[in-house]
Image (cartoon, rainbow, N blue to C red; front, side):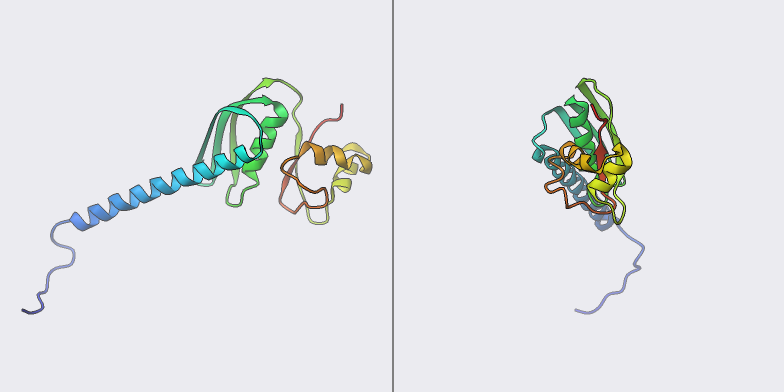
Length: 156
């Protein structure tokens, strides 16, 4: 017995090929897992959407399906877009009931729902309109954070 020396870069590539195949399989499993987690976020909203498809590519979520209303569609997009690590949502959702789209607003440091309502509706007391429009994404009207994106629906 003894130590035998070989050229490191010469010979069969079997180990490298198996390693690459294992990495590809692990990457595919990780992608499927992340897509399932994102779909679970949408399902946790309790919003009905037919034929939901969620696909994360790099840091962009592609979402499709058929939502009941424009507000349901917007809540789904916001629930996915407000996930850490997601930079954009490619919205391919169609809606059954057409209604005016809401404005999306990114919360800034020092914002409150009443301050946002004052800016968008000229009435700080309309903050509950914004809170209601963002349920179930918001649980408490006093708990918003910078960087969060909210729906600002048109007033009736």
